[in-house]
Amino acid sequence: MDMNQEKVNPEGVANSIRLLKTYLDEIEIGPLIIALEGLKENPDSAQHLANVNTAFNNLGISQGAVLTYAPYMIILVSNDPFSDLPG
Image (cartoon, rainbow, N blue to C red; front, side, top):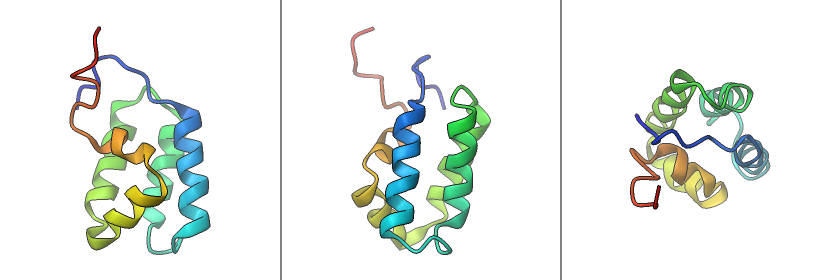
């Protein structure tokens, strides 16, 4: 999962956590919140980003709600979100 050396925005992750806790059942998405907290603390960690992707993939039908309420998640779960941006 190569983000072309782009940095994860910790503020975007923190905002996503806040929005998800506000609008969704925190127990249902608990593993994703935990993974996002780890990524927020270690934004350069490929492992933490992989943990976010795994937790998101395990959400099933709740993925749509997550993307609705926390649009920054689209960047985090894209395979190569910065591939079409000029370098």
